[in-house]
Length: 185
Image (cartoon, rainbow, N blue to C red; front, side, top):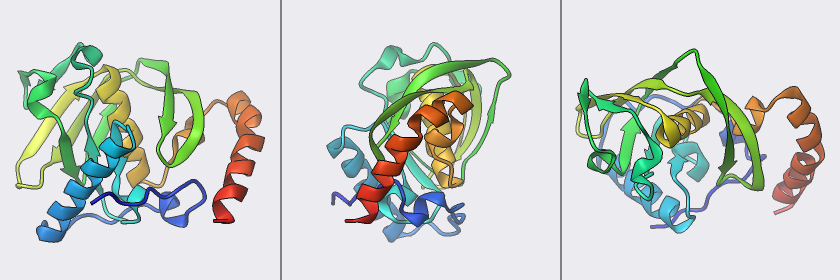
């Protein structure tokens, strides 16, 4: 089922989400709905708060571009990107490397706005799966960026919060207009 994607200004987008303590049929259905919603919206990632659920669950699918990463290790082994897509995870933990780069980001909850965000190039993430297994992922490229973006959502952080001071100033009026439009709906 395709769910409504909440937009900038909705309070749940600013909440630190609750841990998933039990994976039941409702969680499996939510994950399936989120994947369907993400694909319908032409996104590469979606976090539960974006569909109004304040739990630590996210989905990612960057399979449209298998060359979007040059490093991908899962549980210490080199793997093909397509072997882990789509990625569905709960209660993630992530650490970024020291080296950072700028990259263009957008968000399904902040329509029409894209901006350069500086993030670590390489990440290591612990991603518990719905079946109880755990993926330890080390990656870079688009997958690293999307993991950071979606995990930020689970912590109530939006990509516009990560803009440089200059970019925030130049984006201020656009975000204010977007907030006004979204609160009038």
